[in-house]
Length: 82
Image (spheres, rainbow, N blue to C red):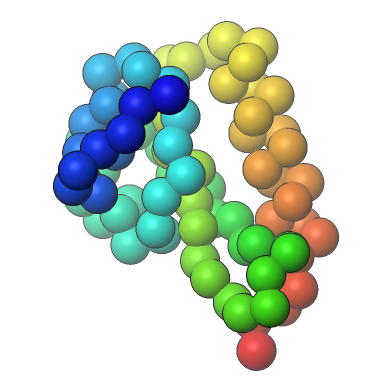
C-alpha cells in the first residue's frame, strides 16, 4: 500500500507499475498513456460519489483482474445517482 500527498500522484504510481488505485473520477483527465480508468459507485454510501479504478493497461496479473472484477460488481449493485 502506498500513500500519496497529492491526488495526481496516484496515477503516476499506477503508471509506474505499483498496482491499482481508487481515485476521484475526475483524475482520469490527467492520466498518462497506458493507464485505464473504470467508473464505480459506492453501494454502501448514503450519498452519491463518483469513484474510479485505474491500472496499467498491460497489467494482466490475476490479483489486478480480481480487484477489477470485485470493483465492477460493486459498481453494478450501487444505487443510482439521485
